[in-house]
Image (cartoon, rainbow, N blue to C red; front, side, top):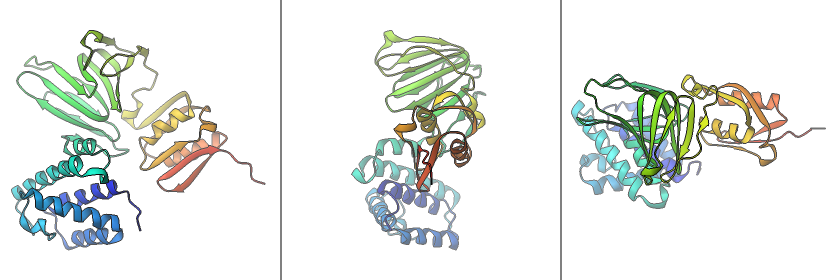
Length: 324
């Protein structure tokens, strides 16, 4: 069939591995796993690769290394197996070669303390009372010790409302581009590619770029900026509704259609693109992120565009064509 990319099949294979070793080995689970393997040659190839890596790791139970299912392991064994599975994913992602594109990033995502899938929102309350909302396709680690409270954002978007710490430990958010230190605040951080974007809703936050300490800058409530490891970009005003994503909404104010589609694409599986011929059109309104198909339908009714769906996962917004 060839319906999946090699990297997608590989990630699914590890998902099955985690499930099969978590203690849920009912007959229907095994049947579904075997059906998945037989549904696409890419799936079977990915599973075989997983088996080979498992055998090389040697730390996994021998029966699993030969492709058979463990029968109702004890709770502790199941947890240990799951940890080994996650380590396996790191091995696959970092050492698997071209068949798993973006391996390091995928490994970090799967090994993160907390993560969300595409289109998912998740809310956390940490031990000190700090509240974090994870947006779509987001992964973070949380490390509290005697000297600091550290949240590492690998990818995606988070909203944080910090709590006062009785021990007086400083709070930091780390991304690939640098470190953020809030001062009693509510703020949002988005990380991806070569930059990090900070928006401050209450209080203040210091930006400390990774390679340019002298470029450090403090943002106040109502301000936003994008920074790289070497510089902090211009400080701008936060637009109204910039935190609407935490309630599952996208607020657009005269937004170019290309930017709007780019935002919407973050909440959809597959590829969602905008034809350059209509990229300049403007979008305003409040849109539900939980149903991106409905949003696309609304665009087709209100703008001179058509939504061309080649497959469920390949959609392009095109200029409207007049039909005779």
